[in-house]
Image (cartoon, rainbow, N blue to C red):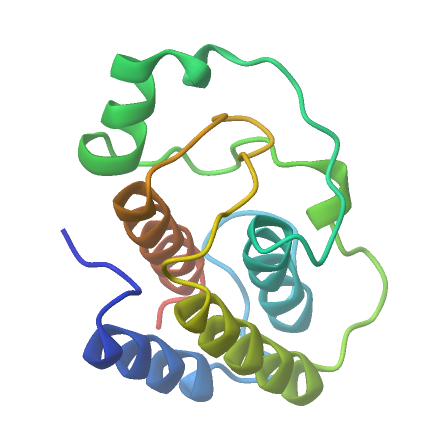
Length: 146
């Protein structure tokens, strides 16, 4: 499983985000490219304590289900997200790409320090965080065909 703890994987993700076009349409969902990039930045910021997200109890707090979602199962299209991660207004793709790249590097530098509990998954290991972030970013890049 890929992880954002690997510098090569982070570079690959950033190269894919760089290929994203302003007018690119998603294969599913309602977000435009700028909104998607802003959405992808939120979970990293939340994990590092830079952004508040309301916690909620979900079945993904059960260890086995959490493991399956992070490491095994394909992710559903249009799965719900925290309201704090939804961006509905116009978003500047280039500005958001820079913010995402900076957040990704801060996230990688945060390794070895405590992360906040995930709003839906609860307490995660560092390994879980690295894989979950890669899967989340990859999921949305795939949504836009990059």
